[in-house]
Length: 419
Image 1 (cartoon, helix red, strand yellow):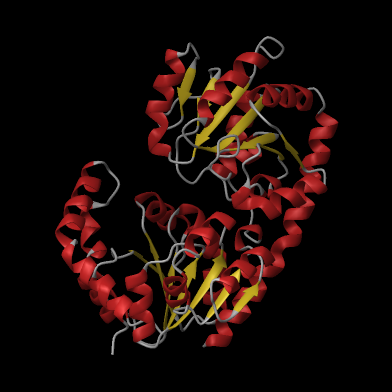
Image 2 (image 1 turned 90 degrees about the vertical axis):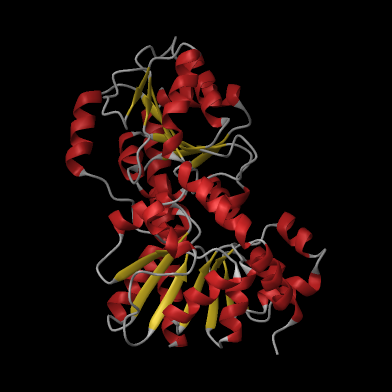
């Protein structure tokens, strides 16, 4: 018999299906969905299921997909006979996978969590093993896997203190949902403890795949071209910015420009489609701005790197990077991406999404934590005047980031053991 919570969720899903269809159509008009592949969101795949064993991995968006790709490559190398399906929920992640995926990796958009879409997806793909990433928990899909007897592993398990507190308000629901996972591989010991406190049955602290990823790729010819163009021009990068970050970067840029009149501030928005709007705001404030997406060169005060899949280029081009979402209460972005490429790292007080890595980088002398926009300008000025310190921070970060590779081997072994 189907558990009553699953029955209730399916009933709600069936009732709101017309609203979900309307919502998805509105997202198509805003460029948030791929109209040509919208059928995938309704559980109607166009691709055939390969014969034999199939592993389904789900990643919410770009960051989670980037973290899972090295693991999927390792699984493919170890067992090329196994079919690999990766689902994501955003058009930017689909574009990234099309660019950075590999032969043998199938991609689909994840179905919305309504009964008809869930059933269509699972009936078609019939996964033998499911790998979920981080903290996106869809009751319909997870319950559907559990009802079909499919082993499900949560990788990169992340549970903040705030989220755990919310789940404690519905303890039976938390136990039901987490009980759909056979094993949870948490990022940290604190994450593991919170999962156990909510009733998860088998939890292991395994580390963070994002800390084990290979250095981000870049176009070597494009890097050489930009390096030649910029020469010794002083520069810094705001990496993966969120709304609110750009105004802080502009404030720092204005404060630094008297001491560094030739300064280049590079802003790489987390969501590149925001580029034109960011440029309009910056120009309204009096800044000279060039857009990468428009084919413009960095012959300006601020260069908006509003393209997808080029973060490896910007981290190599800039000697120091401020992590977006850390001076506002968003939780920060992955500081190991710049560290792995030898860039000194700066971040604000809000790094709760990467608390362990940021604390380790601070302890190694590879990063600097700042409190506000004024402190940002002061820290940038001090570092730009001290290339020896910049180089030392970058090298310490590179050493630490390279030490994190063991988690990939551990998780690859654990997944293969399930087969």
